[in-house]
Image (cartoon, rainbow, N blue to C red; front, side, top):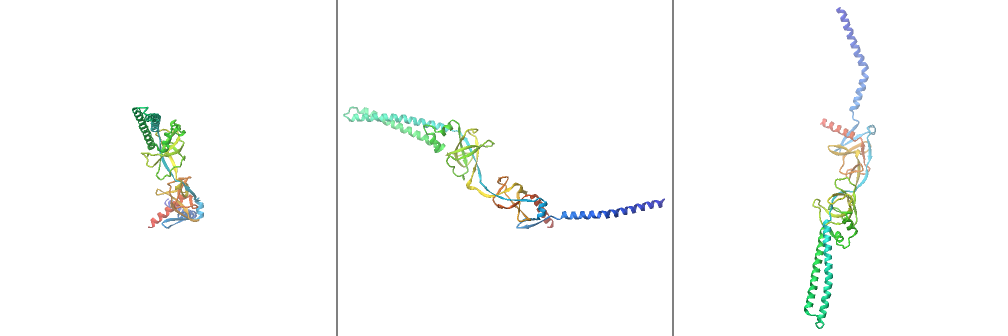
Length: 354
């Protein structure tokens, strides 16, 4: 019985040995293929070196094709810088009130002028009669003279009052609106304001802004809304400032529409004199690292360098840049993250070697 068990155990051991060598024999090729594959994966398909303080990644054209790394040339662009200006739709109640007082003062002056003409003629007639053999008494001449001089004083007072009212209008509304408000017959532009077909807007421009040209226009939009913009036409400079915004103030008129007295408006000003030339960096070329925007620029057929770019000004689906890039530079528009990963591998390897 013991011999039979020993034979069984021996056969089992022999079978195990045979199975082991069969496994080794048939698994050798697979192991070598796996080892070769692992060795290929460990080898990086690119070479990274440091030049002038930045990493330069070298990738063969074949690897670029396999990794779908594509580039695009940068196009030139000119940016017309814009500035935001703000304004208020202002009521003209005080202008109407001053206009009414001024016209009343002028009317009173006209009445006094008529009275003065009569008193002057009467005084001159009586004075002539008095000189002609005293056909009129001296007392009558003195009474006529007093009336004449009284009318002169009244006329001067009325003219001064009207002049003071004109000056008050000028201090608040400027020369152009003063001229329109003091006309006896209202102009079409003043009638449009009085009838609320148009509104008056005081807009505050930055101090660097050029003086608006006569009858120039701009687009205004109620602040904080998506309403359609309204065309406003320049009238004149405003003698008063906006207490909430520092800058140069100007009067514009615009169709009333949805604009209401007291409403804030916003306008974008194009500064043609401050235009700048640069390039548009496509949005697909941007890679983010350490909270900053970068692009990979292709220096030759196989070399790529990462450089910083500005994302301060968005334009045409990309970002406008003045410095660091020029028209025709090839930037990576697809595969930038892969290049960034290769650069990280290089940095990690150097840290480990240190």
